[in-house]
Length: 186
Image (cartoon, rainbow, N blue to C red; front, side):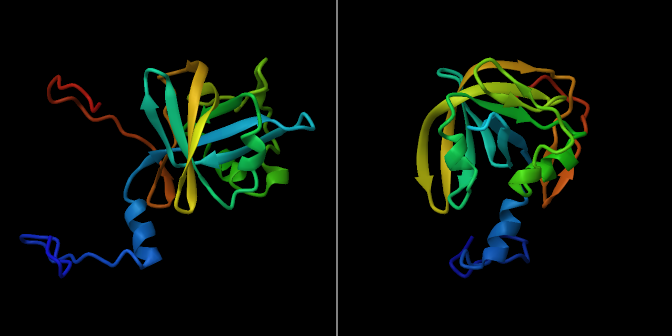
């Protein structure tokens, strides 16, 4: 890559300035990600939650995952006060529910019956995995906050395919035959 923005040998592509928000969003959308719901019981004992596509595993010891939350979120300030949060990994059949949880707060749980744990964590039925967590720490990061969640309990079904978000649309995974027995990424 050169200072002029030329990507390199044999490539006709040029880099766009980071100051172009559209180019930055397109670049981010090239990376596929899983999608989760982060939910709890609200102060009125009604479910409260939001969808998050910036989710990743962080650590085995202690068991940590992260979600990135927009600083403008009106839901996160209420979720962060809960003693327990339910993280549900959406299954490939739940794209409509995922969009619903990203929509207006008053309609996020319409037509679904979430499950509530003894600790107040709320989970979506038929999800690929369910993690009961508490907030470990928060790190300001530009226009988002990186939230580290410590996992207290979990359940998962490896046979349930997760929902994948890529290029601003939901997609399904496709298994590829293994060529050799190489270890996966760490």
